Image 1 (tube, helix red, strand yellow):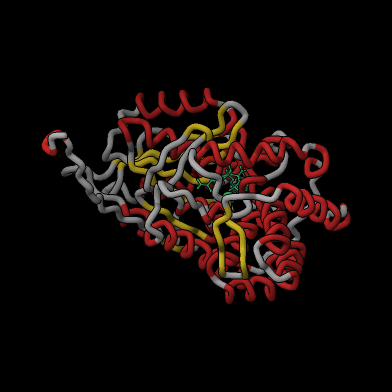
Image 2 (cartoon, helix red, strand yellow; image 1 turned 30 degrees about the vertical axis):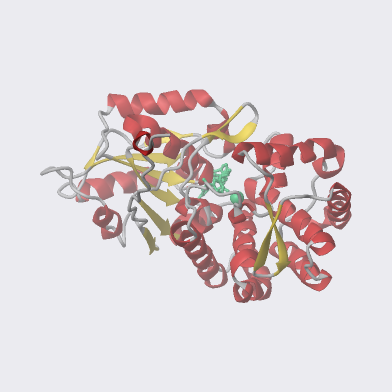
Length: 389
Ligand SMILES: NC(=O)c1ccc[n+]([C@@H]2O[C@H](COP(=O)([O-])OP(=O)(O)OC[C@H]3O[C@@H](n4cnc5c(N)ncnc54)[C@H](O)[C@@H]3O)[C@@H](O)[C@H]2O)c1
Ligand SMILES: [Zn+2]
């Protein structure tokens, strides 16, 4: 073996992740967006806005506000074309033809690698528009302005994009670090109660993985959050975003090359429940059920005390997150197939995150099917319909 025939070179690439918090990105704090954009040579940055249709519908002045904002800042940015509207929710991720439509618009607008796509919407729209932006020219700069609690607390700062294919969640997608993420609390005002509460499944998830004190706070504030008290909800959304950002930038595995994916705690069943229910269950609702299953399993198999498990289940219920889901009982083999899909998506050994305690996650490679079956039954028993009030 000639050593000169082998060239293995490790190298690093520096990324910057920019996260901003504001309460009025298109009016009161308009510099916030303009400041994160870099000029393109000697010209102002070229910016195209993409907006979740549902957000536009529930906030009828928003398109006009975006136009007024860009006109007022014509010296600092150039708006390219109209504000583009796209279907909100999982619909955009389930129709692959929308991807082609988005790429055609980028092409017709002559967007290039130094242009910006600013996407305003829920996690589904951020994922789909982000995917299109990441493959056009091998990456157009993406600024995310998330409009759901879930996207502000979790997916907005993530480095993943994607859409669903072959009936599977996020089967096609990319790892792509966004240029910037701007969390604007005012944009949450028009969100439905159902979607408002969904984000707190991910807030709970990250607290269980990283921060016992945050979990205690969430338990204390759960009923106020359910009533949309922003003085209770706002700081926890912010802390969740910071934890997710910290994990991505400091956790040593932003592009998920390693076996463990702790941020996917509770997600092996959640992704499958979403698909089995034909996406009638929201991601956050499915995550709440997925967390309940893995929390009960942790109490049966990995040392989590039943007191801690009960407290977590109570927190979910106090938040108003229903654990009721007929698919839990009706399609158990389908649900177990989700575990294999989860493994296959990553390749290699099955690695699930469970808990030894709040704030103490543990990797599990072998799942005891009998105990998992018991966990599913117990969650199905807790999940009496009256929980959803
Ligand atoms: N990329 C990642 O790392 C990552 C992480 C977690 C979740 N996700 C994905 O995010 C998606 C879920 O996102 P979500 O929970 O934000 O929900 P969503 O995008 O499905 O939005 C829910 C509904 O609310 C509407 N909406 C959004 N913002 C609104 C507002 N301010 N006012 C009124 N209506 C509004 C949407 O149009 C949609 O109908 C799933 O597809 C999930 O897989 C991705
Ligand atoms: Zn999630």
